[in-house]
Image 1: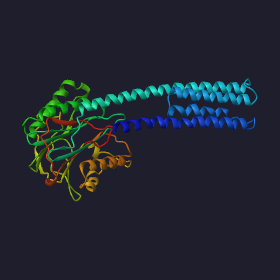
Image 2: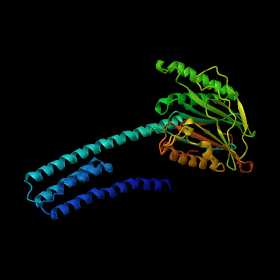
Image 3: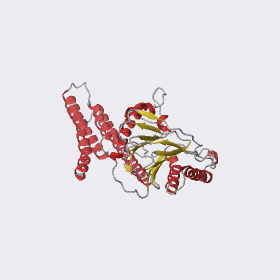
Image 4: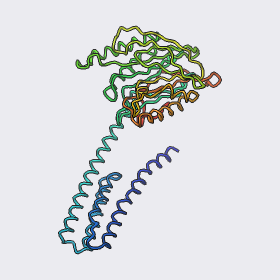
Length: 393
């Protein structure tokens, strides 16, 4: 099945480019036929340059050269039909068309080289994404999980937003964070924060102590690697959530991060009470408050970064996340991510000015739970996207 799909998808670009090739060839044939049969004072030959000019948009340099040669040959035929090849007018037209065709070939070669470079950059970005961003599973114990990452920078699939999840002593610990900045410059701090979380989250330490460990890691990184001109500007917001497998009481601690939304069936959206501490890296000795709330079966916990709620439309209005998700409280995490991606991009007109990440965690009702073995190790992802921004489970 996969080989058939792959073969069909590989044939589609080939068939498309060959179908488009009929356009410049048809132009050459039509222009030549009309010019030959037109009165002698009508000169359509110079318009033949349209054919090689449009070819680089869908074909490579060799095809462009072939179309240019065909157009030049057509210009020679027109010249031979209208008064001979050695008139000054026809010689100038032939030379001009040939020169312009050569320029089109050069442009096509440069464009093809640029596309190859971009393809290599995308390949490297995807490789980095798979190294840094371990995909979140669709389900851990009684929890169904879906995630969404939208990068602000063109050609980027990763940025300063991050999230991770790990199993720890009968509970799932989830991290979502936002490193100052966006795109590639923020990847170093994001990787550090993810590594520290992966290393420490398995330890049987209280959630507030885990936040302190992450805070110290970010502070050490800033002290060692922060340029003097950026002193005090390297920090990250983070939200840590601990969801027990059997206890509905869920704990969380915030380091300057927006509070989550608790979605209950029947279009009910609540904001759990939160007492945030300063962002990570601002005060390494800051005290982190532990907050608790009830996360019942059937509820969905929505974690997000500020790139979501600070997204503006053309009138400068922020994205009303709580208002919009109230429509989809009964949906699965995967469907919720699909709705939010489409709605958020519609709100901003198709392009975000900051990275945006979301995680939907749903505690499945007791009667729908399936038996799942304990997940070994941890799973984490920093950014997500694959074309920037599709839901991933």
